[in-house]
Image (cartoon, rainbow, N blue to C red; front, top):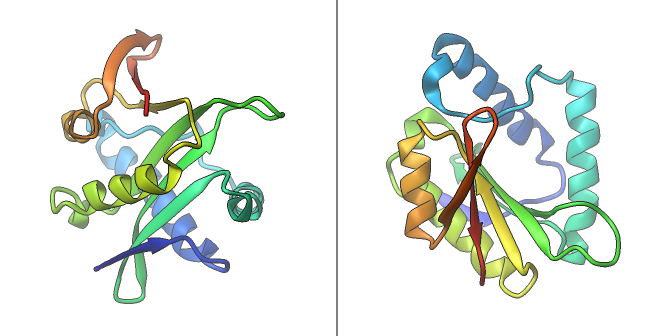
Length: 161
């Protein structure tokens, strides 16, 4: 298992990881994962990934992957909220293949992204469903504090570096 920066050309591994979340939710809707309401097409996901990937060299966003063998098994990003000159807030996101959860892979990914993003965000938010206790524990481990809940049962957590 290795944790490293996201590289150019890793769309297929990242897309496969993201699309696997929709499959998981189809078999277990109470799982506590957050996704778009409808699975995007491969083209839509390629466009989104391309937009994110183009901004990485400027330090906005920060993205790391967990790799096992030749497979991407985890992805963590911290990305600016909104666009424009003044963007002090960001959102943290993480995705892990089920067989790698509970093995400190998420901690390694979040730790790397937070370290690389140090000083880039005034506020960093992680939003998880209240029933996703493993994600809530991970957030608490890294100093996120629950600040409230928004409609749809997604508690918003904020971290101030």
